[in-house]
Structure formats: structure tokens, C-alpha cells
Image 1: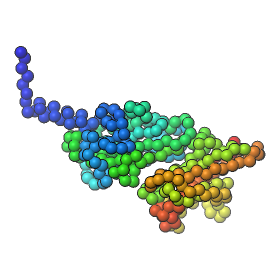
Image 2 (image 1 turned 135 degrees about the vertical axis):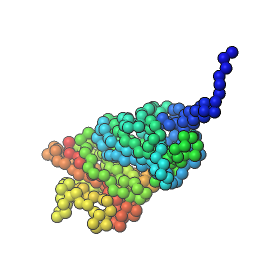
Image 3 (image 1 turned 45 degrees about the vertical axis):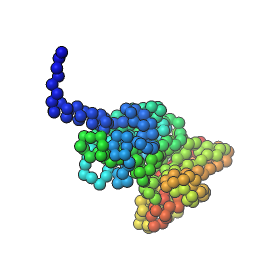
Image 4 (image 1 turned 90 degrees about the vertical axis):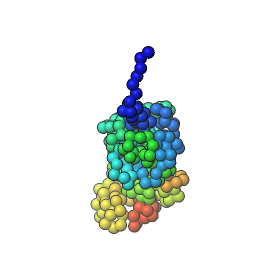
Length: 322
């Protein structure tokens, strides 16, 4: 009978390998590698392998374009931070549709439900860059994420984690990307409102003569009055040149990008900070002479947390009449 010599070093190596496996150094997505199917949207999430509850001091940030063309490739960045000086970490990001293209230290894998997802490929950083490929069907895409601020001790317990959103202990907050109809172009970015949410404006149908279509604004405060702006110019509003930065007059990082020619008001529906939605219907007469004229849209929403003005502004859209 062959005998195997067991050494302390061998035991340590085996335990270390098991720890790295349990800690998922090479990343996880929902429903794979033993992870719960609600990894980015509910409990136990990362708590199945790390500290049992999310830490309110962990911050998960997502950056990238939020109003895009069908099939567009969008550069994105996800970061995880906490008050420590450690640099190890991980994440899982899942989208309702579209797809991801891996960047440095990331890998793509579909979840058990088939939803596109991306995760880290090693635990050596807390910031990752990659790309999102928008679906070809216009409409809203939602993303959810969880991030881990690892302490670097190569063990599966003791690491702090949190969900994406203004409160990292609350699961299911959405990062929203709107895929516009073909021919709708987005300009600029929404300005920062309450809890850090930036309004996102999109259109799933083109501006066409003889039809009605909606502009859709997301990331608003529910119950807030939201003003849809239709402008005939994006270069001037009377004597005011556009785009016009509002910071010098108390508007924070907001920018007016469309002339205020036609205004409509809607009340944002929804529940929870950043979950407000305002849809405004626009109508064009059946007049062929209108074809080719560009229209410019933006959304201005009452938001006391945005700036001293108490208004937030979305990105702007250009829709050439068809």
C-alpha cells in the first residue's frame, strides 16, 4: 500500500486553495458556481461567502452612457470602495438585455436565467472597465450589481460588500440605460440629483408626422413635477447661447441644452428614491413639409437635492422629423 506523507505546508496549501475557491477569486455571476440566483438583487448575495450582511460603508459605482443608439457599444466602468486602504475586490453585474464585452481583469458569463452578466477574473483590483453592447430593440435596459471590498487575507470570510445604489444595504437598485429609436441622438449627461441619481431621457419611437410618441424620463424622484421641453434650437434660446451651464446661477452641474419653446408637465410615478418615471406624449400633424426638421428635447424635474434652484436636468435628445 502506498503511503502519502502529509505535511503542514501541504495542509496549508490545501486550505488556501479551498479558501480561494470559496472566496471566488475568479468571479461569480447569479446562479453559477453555487451563487444564489438573486446575487445582485437580494439576499444572501455575497453574504453566502463573505460577511453575512452588506456594509453601509461600501460604495458600488457604475459609469457609462445612459441614452444610446440601438446596438451601440458603450464603455463602462464599475468601482467598489470602502474606508479601508485595501485594493482587493470583486463584483457581479447583470443586465436585463444586451451583452457585455470583457475588459482587463473581467470575464463574461451568462447567468442561469440567460441574462447577460460580467464579473471579475481575479480579485486584485477594485475598479474594472469593460463594454456594454446595447440591444437592437429600443426601450429601457436595467442593470443590477453587487461589489465586494475584500480585505486581502485570502479567506472567504470577513470581506465587506454592498449593492449598487444610493444605499448599499438595499438590494435591487437599477442602473438604467435607455436604447433610443433609430435616428434619435442623445447629447450630454443628466445632472446630479437627490441621492446621486442623474435623470435619463429616451425615446423608443421616432418623431413621425401624423403620430404620437413618448419621451421617457427615468431616475427621478417619485411624485415630483417633471417638465418636458421641446425646443426648435440647441444653439440659442433668445439671447442665451446653448448649451448653457447653470452652475454660475446656482444650477450645480446642470446644463440647459434645448430652447424652451413647448413645455409639458407630468408627475413622476414610482416608489423609492431614483425610481420616478415621467412619460410625456408628443403629437405631430400629418404635414409632409415638416419632414427633416430637427426637434430638441430635454427634461427638467423638481428636485430639491439637485442644487439651489431645486431642479435637475436630463440629457438632451435630437429627433429629426420623419
